[in-house]
Length: 477
RNA sequence: CGGGGUGUAGCGCAGUUGGCAGCGCACCGCGUUUGGGACGCGGGGGCCGGCGGUUCAAGUCCGCCCACCCCGACCA
Image 1: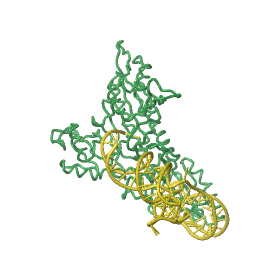
Image 2: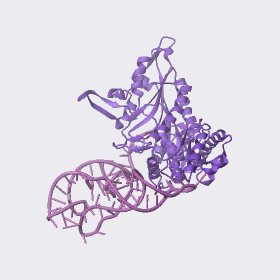
Image 3: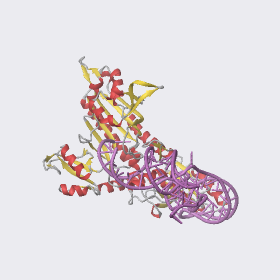
Image 4: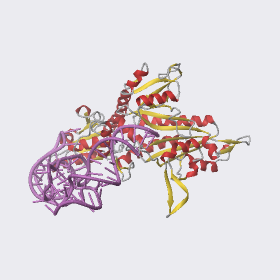
């Protein structure tokens, strides 16, 4: 542990981010450049993300399976856009068991190819469809610049892979899962996100269309926080995923894939975190309530600890922890748990024992303003409401921040200055050249063409030609 | 791969004209403390990134190498 304060967010955002991850013990750097160790507190958060998502996957008819880490190199080469997109960042295994392999194996950067291969074996008839499989796993992409959670050589994620009889069904699946991610982000993580379609240049290698949820981080940069791809028949044709329809005719399947990774932890950190450290959304927080006993001597300690012991039943429906360390002071514990983002703290001292109450403090409102005395009477209900209130307030705060940093520049000159202070929401003709010009001039890329469009038409912010859609331009992680 | 920077205790750093390797935090022990990052006393911990050179003597000077960080090109 470390007594120093975090570098303030406003002073150096990325330094703040890195320090927070270390101090909150979410992750640590591994001996290999660009790899990280997810520490227990970080992994517990990931487990909660997993179960929240997994429930939503199951509710929409999906099942889990596990596909292998190693993929024959030749598989990647079967889909030409796919291999073009991924070959620069592949980790390749050339040796095994002491001798050179006949065919190099790639460590999966994503599993479309090997899953496509298996689907072609499994799918024979329209009766086999749809296939709705998800896998929880890890993938490796050899990135040049890395940052904990946001971009690491190896990361953990889930990838759903589905096969359908018709384009319509595949399209519906793609949108359904985009919606699942959107609901998860908002309802579980309190992260406001904008669901939308990616531009052609930002599209997944091998997809027909890519959709994403985009979130604004505390420095106004955008973070793609989850993606859903309509793969059309690209992979079906490359891997001969075919079925016989009702008329006994061979048809290619329509496939989708969708993923959300440990990057989302980065989204949580950078959406909610403050100068005191991490702020976790109550539904995902590994510890929702921390109880800090306060006493001056052994006699008081005995009374306080007994009081806390009796409190445990009342709190059984929450994830809570009693910090009974004797070697640090209460003040230290406050700061310590604030760094770790625990949503609610209950301070219990002799005064509370006497009055049959506890002092609550909410993480999202630091200091005295967030403190409130709670009576033991109906405590469980009070805390349940408090956690809900914290969730809502975290969401509203993040949304207000985002909305106040989205601008509608009047012309291209204004767009350029807008990029320095937030996102630009502008009409765009769809031409990649305009996109490239913006990137060249401002380093901002198109983030997504939101599903929610104003309608009508106007002039492209870059070239002035007719545009039918608005797009977000922003710097991104 | 280009530009910049840093390597000294777990972390953050100081180390002068070359002369016993130090400080703060953390860690261990004892005591006093405990409602917003406690204090005192006593301890443990080092291949000074590596290799070579200059020198009676190198953390310090010279050469080469390595690693990591920041900025760019690439990206969930």
